[in-house]
Image (cartoon, rainbow, N blue to C red; front, side, top):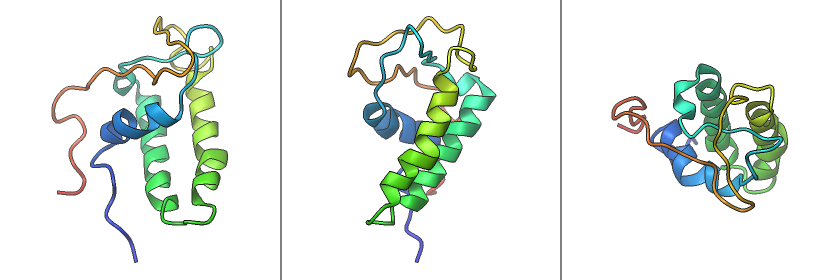
Length: 114
């Protein structure tokens, strides 16, 4: 039985969940752009993370662990690498701060639950 998604869009997933649980210091060896939604690679990777999370969250035994190991760590390391798509970003955070986020234009990510 499939459950309805928790998040309505990849933006909601990132804004309300991922950036709070996947906190990293940004600025030296890690890069991030608060307008991640402007970068095609970031959108595709974050969409993949969101959809994998929606599926794996339903496995109460090891789903979250599998999601972090096989999905979150893989994609977030690729996105945050100094040679990755945000390599020229000037955004910085301190240890324990959520990843920077700028709200995308209205309607860019439609609610998939509707």
